[in-house]
Each structure stands twice: as structure tokens, then as C-alpha cells.
Amino acid sequence: MFIDIVILMLSFVNRELEIQELETLSKKFGLLVVWGRRRIGKTHLLSHWIQKNGGLYTQAIEGSTGVQLDQVYQDIKEKLETTIVPKTWNELFEVLELQKKPLIFCIDEFPYLVASNPSLPSIFQKWLDHKKKSNVFLILSGSSSHMIHDVFLNPTSALYGRAIKLMKLEPLSYESFCKACGLKPSSENAFIQFSLMGGIPKYWEFIEKKQSCISTAEKLYFGFSPYMENEPRRILNDEKVYGLSPINLLEVIGRGAEKPSEMAARLQVPQTNLSKTLQQLLDASVLTREVPFGFSEKDAKKTLYKITEPSLRFWYRVYSPHRTLWSSYSAQMKNQLLRQHASTVFEDYCRKLYPNSMRYWDKNVEIDLVHVPIKSTIKSAKGHDVLVAEVKFKKLRIKETQSILNQLTQKWSLTPTSKKYSNPLFKILDVTNLKKKY
Image (cartoon, rainbow, N blue to C red; front, side, top):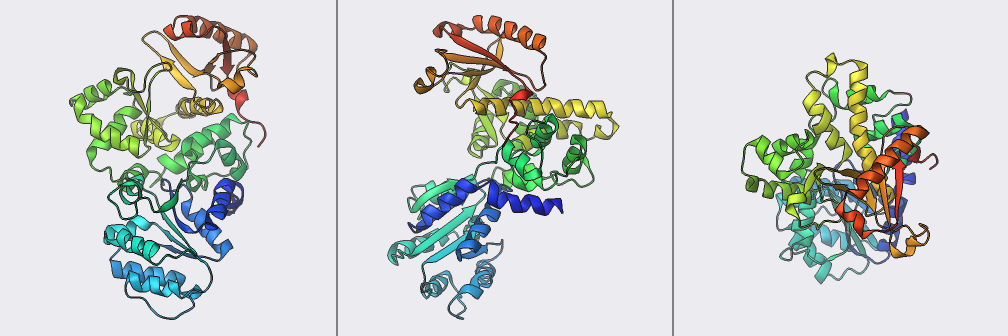
């Protein structure tokens, strides 16, 4: 089946850098923390690498400490050099001490264990510190950035400063998506499909060759009991962002209220009431905070918030507002909604082509991309000290490109920032900027 092909390719093609890092760090021994949002492929990566390297792997479950410990033992007992059944975590570590070869031990979903036994980080800390296991490579993995902070970055935590590295798995690229799913990167339809699910490998299993964008959207979001129906709540629960407040906030942001003042007005609450929840969503990487190019990040009056990940953005921008009426829409209307969403993801894609590029906006002007080359690239940029670009999610004709270019030049001249740069380079980025080769 096509789904099996996708899963197989993800291990060997799209996580090479992470696998290389695991190989390097495993030679140093000690504690490695691997984290990233749910569905991003942590379990698949770690179980694949552990199997290849002959280590012990267990995936923790929710439950009482006794049940959890028994599950860990059942998962690893076939590779242990003893038949002793541990009844406590300290006994488990004593069993592991009997392993004659250097030990690789991975516990996936570690937060489940800590939730049942808050003292567990201290138990692990004592094992790591006092047993002086120089031949142990311990990997603890979880989905929650909240957990990472509490257990590994909080100075009061027992495991603070104990990890040789905290490795965060990021969403995979558009090119990786196309390669895994057998789609052409230069195709607009392929990019629309990507915009529905972003760089989250688990969602890619719903892709089928020659499947229309509408069919993909309906399979994931609008069909009967769709896979993505409760995904936002699961992600927020992982991050311990609870209650109606974050849901309501994401709803209004998805519907266009990107300024805190606009959010407060739509929610009919004081703007100061939003600060804590906004910060929680920023910490969880659910939201991204933006200021215009040339302005300080501390300028609260200029700040806008947008939903970071494409699938969540689609959920709140398209699925939630239109789910009731979706079945009554024409194919043309559905495609229009999908393209409008994809255009916002395409802007993000183009900005990633120019690292550290930003948007610019004020009361009268909006520019999609402004990028200042670093000193080492100024020469290669033929002396241009700033790149100013407009992004269009379609293939433009020559006359269209020239017309938009003229408008862009005029818009830039109206911005106060333009006076700081003497030799701007103006570009129009359309879908021909999608990579045609891997």
C-alpha cells in the first residue's frame, strides 16, 4: 500500500541529520533529550535507530507507576541478560547494571512516567550521577515543550543541566513531503496538499497519488469523523494549555484578528487578559509573534500573531468557520478557500528561502518579504543592500510581473525604512520558485 511506502521512506530519507546526530552523541554517552510536537515522527525515528544499534527501547503508557514499570520491563526483557523482574525503578536500574555491553536505553513518552511519579527525575538523576555509568546512553523523549522546561530547563529540577543535548525535531520540509509522497515539487496542487498538513509526517499517510486537493481536505477535515477533528485540543493538552480561553483565542486569530486589540474586541475582554494565554501559545510554538521589518521586537503596538503550523492554521482559518456549510459549496468555492490558505503558507515558504527575512506593514503599505543580506553575501548580491519582494501563489505572466514590480517599487519608496537602503533589489516570487528538483 502507498501508506507503507511513505512510512518506510521517512526513516531513511528525511531524518538523515538527526540520525547522524544520534550516532555522534551515542559515542559520548550520558543523557539525550529528544522532543517535538505530537505526530512529528519522534517514535519512528528513535525506534528505527535503536533497532539498528541494538539498544533497549520502550514507549511509556499512561497509568499507575506499577503498571508503567511493568510495561517498560515487558518491552525490554527479551534483550536483558537476566530474568530478574524489577519491582521498583531502582531495581530496574540494578537490572540494567548487569548488561555487560555499553547500554543504549530509550524511554519514549517520558512525561507519562513523570505525571504518575513526580519524583522520577530525582531517581534518574541519582542513577546518572552516583552510579557514574560512563557506558550508558540514555534517551528520554516527549511531545511537550512544557515538559521539557519543567523537567530539563527548570533550575530547580533534578535533571536540570544533566543532558548532553536537547534535540528538538522540527517539521519536515516541503521537498521532503514531495519526495515521501511521490509528488512533483513544482506542482501547485502538491503545495496545496502540503499546506493542509504541513511538515508533520503522520498526516502524510493520508496522501494518495492523483488525489485531488478537495479529497485530501475532506479526508482529513470535513468527512465523517475526520482524523483532524480533535487535533488542536490534543496538542494543547500536551502543552498543558487548558480551557476555553486558548481555543477561543485561536478561533479569532484564525478568522483574521491578529492584533491583540482586535482579539480583545472580538472576545469582549480586556486586552491585558490575553497576555498569559498568548505567552503559553508562543512557548508551545502554536503561535508566532511578528513585528514589521525595521521595528523592535519589543514594540507591542506593532505586534501581530499568527498560527505557526500549516495544519493548525487551516483548522482555524478554513475548517472551523466553514465546516457546517462545506458540503453545500461548489468545487470552485472549495478550491478558492484551499488556495487562499495555501497562499499564506507559500509566503512562509518563500521567506524561508531568505533566512531572517520579514514582512513589512504600516497603515498604508504591506510588503511580503524584506531581507538584508549578511555581509558575506552582499558581493554576490551585486551590491544590493536589501531585497524587497512580493509573493504570489500563482504563475505570473511577464506583463503581470512587471505591473506588480512597478507597484512594489512605489510601495517601498513610501516606507520610512527605504531611506536606510541605497540599492534595493526588487523581486516578484511566484510558484516558479517551488523547487523542480529534490
